[in-house]
Length: 134
Image (tube, rainbow, N blue to C red; front, side, top):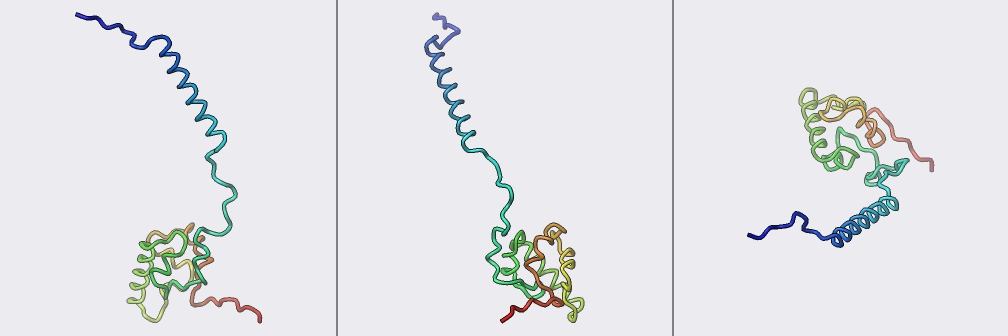
């Protein structure tokens, strides 16, 4: 019966493997030093989709597509806003569902942080837009 030696790699082969491993580690280290994985600070002033809106919108009359363009909203939350608006209109058709911006907190999935993000993009029935001077 043939006997197998416990060492299948010769000394020169081990040296080559060690050299390749060291070179690979050095290459990865150089890549990480040249391209650090950091997030830019400060964050951009304008939101990512800020220019997609032509003007402020009224959540009492906006469509799902108009609401979905708002930052952090999306189609699902836009549909939740419309569902809440429909239920509020069924209770009292003479009152708007969202008279002030804090009324949006009643919609499932909208919290204080999201409301603070949405405020610059919304207008409500009691607000007047500033008129530009001629």
